[in-house]
Image 1: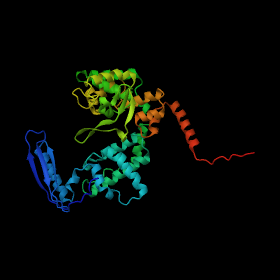
Image 2: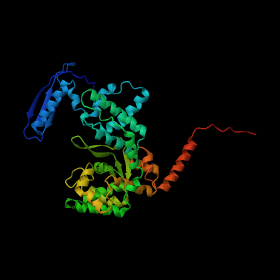
Image 3: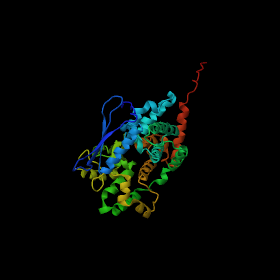
Image 4: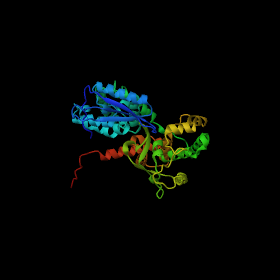
Length: 400
């Protein structure tokens, strides 16, 4: 854990900019200062494409120092800032609140937004984080216990002068929870009806893309038939595919982050096994053949070998135009996952198995994919299970 930060009140910085010819970011800005406590002389540096950007970076750190902000905190990721200041962030809490708050911080806040610098946490970032937790099936209390530590961390950042206001103090989040809940209430309505429609969509997207790149159609079909997220498809490596048992050992995803795309663990840090159905096995083998058997190669890439995202797929294939022409103007890339889960549910995959394949945190989320008649039967069985497991007084055996 990083050492606690001591704010150097009114400290002065010495700064310089070095030009290094031949580099993509040739301007290296550096600041130094004397720590008033340890008397050591730490420094911080960063490279920029233009001298103006380097100078602005120095000026921002100088302003921070004048306001008593440790220059190291100015660009510190939220996770690191939180760990360094946790005693202040959680001060005054009783154990009954501290434990769930710390769990929310560790299990949801850090994996979702912990990589972002404190100053990049905005209202929009918080909205998306909360929506992601809801979409993953977490209960209201879990979401609340995740928002609370984020609010406290950003409040400490406000007191430290890193942000002007607390963006995590969202009002009406319960209403937002209800809206997101309603959106996912019937994910079956978002699914494509059948295999023919899926392949027709894939072919149309390929035909509209630059040089008719077949890889875009492969991404669409694979995502739907595995009921996964496009970030998980993008993160899939050759070594993750077990072609003997035809199982995808899903371990990672590719998502946007500071400085570009990042490879990290799956949502909720839950690795899982996903079946690869016979209809797409030839597709998978063809993709593997394109990598020359390199186990670390990505199974799906763009036409120039780049990583795939939902935005890249949308723009490269003119997605919005194509789905409108096909009569599915509501269809988003994420609805391919809804399609796969709906098909699996209709095929009779048991709900507990479907939950594991989907990686849902709550079985309530998974149940929404069941056909209404099937869900009624499932619910009845679960009610009986709860009844039989309820504590009761042992029956006395009467001997006559």
